Image 1: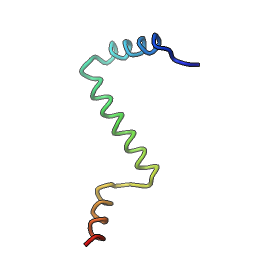
Image 2: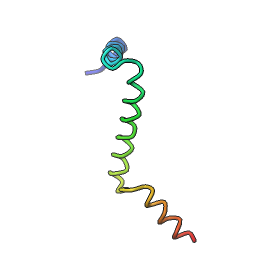
Image 3: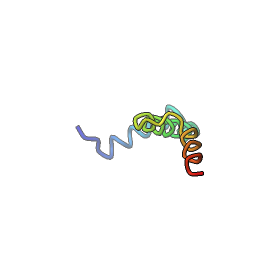
Image 4: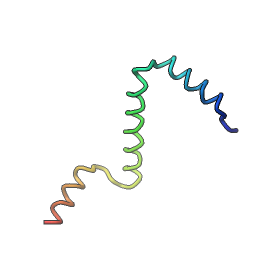
Length: 60
C-alpha cells in the first residue's frame, strides 16, 4: 500500500484542521526531541552532557 500525493495532501489538511497552524511547529519540535532521545537510548547514551564532561577530563 503506497501513499500518493492526493492522500498526503488530505492527511496534511486534516492535521492542519485538527491542530492549527501555530501548534504544528511545537508538535514537530517534540517529535524531533523524542526521535533524538530514542536514537541516543539505542546507542547507549544515557546523558550526553555527562559523557561530554568525562571526555573533557580524559583529554587533560
